[in-house]
Length: 313
Image (cartoon, rainbow, N blue to C red; front, side, top):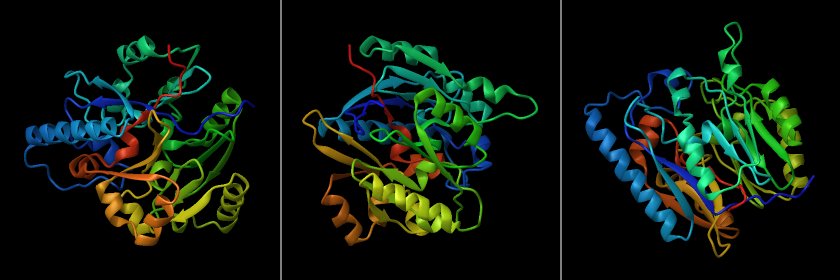
């Protein structure tokens, strides 16, 4: 397999038109706050401000951000989290994914893909979304929410849940020539963790992971063995830190190849000094304040960033 790069400096982000609390995703996302939203219009505006500020922080660090405006209608409360429905790969492949929440399926807009093709080359496109339409047994695989890619070593890490189906991961492996390491992870109440990217983040030479959430000793052993084999320093986070989105980080690079680990301010504030020191020895930490997006959306900085590895035109 051709060795792929782990980090990109091209990111796609969707500027939200109607951000809000999504009842459908709340069914199995324990990270969403159920606190009543007093003023929905105000929340939409605050989300736009947080989004614009995040884009400014990324761009001022030399990271290339392609911003695409969400359409006003139909309303898409989670449009700000595009990483769940699309992924872009170095070999020119674009993949779209089946989504658990019906009202998130409308996020897969053709005009977004057209915008991408203006700047990047797509040689192959694959659609997994027809699996969500099976009346008897719909299957879901929510992009880089469900799968953490070690692109350099061709490994897919995934915790199995209602939104992350093992048979679809097998199909992904066949398509992309990858191998997978799947496991089960639970929150402090014993409920399945809905997305792998809230309990684990993979950098170029490190992994941030909540091992406490993986109860099976054999799975844990297998993971640690793979991390060692692929040269990843393990930086363990606690369940409490995971609940503050400390697992929802993304390492990128800027145009000068300087590495940045993007995370929310909430996630950064949850880290202990020794964790900050270990991470800072390898990469530059970039905390970004998005308190309302992560509170009511149940996703953090990583979920807002869709990495573009496609060849540039």
